[in-house]
Length: 174
Image (tube, rainbow, N blue to C red):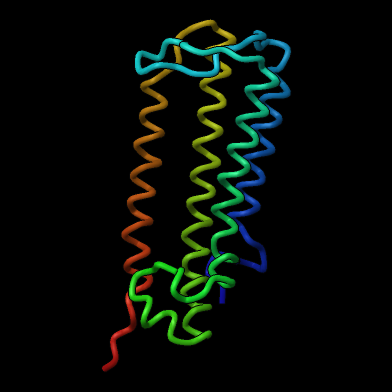
């Protein structure tokens, strides 16, 4: 059983792909309004401190974003192929004792990774939108909005970290 699949679909993957398509559509719809070169990095004050071509910026953002998301989604498949000694999960002696338990642990980890992928894609979307707005309006980056989303993202990551420990706690026999 893979908890992340509902109604036969892998909802985190489809949600992440949908977010990616929305980001792509948004970039495409604003392309002609974006300056070239455009601000690509901002300091703590929100002031731009580095510039690059808009095609270069979105190429780098796409490669880094897609690479990060691919790594998140690939981790459960990698866990299936790694030797037991290279898998670091809570209570690994219990969960890696046999193939049935290993598959349950991997399915639970896949569920958590799916949620993290969706959150990561959403954060990338927010960053892309904020950068595009700042470039079009020729203003500083809206750091307060960025920080709200970054703190929410980090809070969700912390939640998943503690949820992982809970999900991988061995069942009590009794």
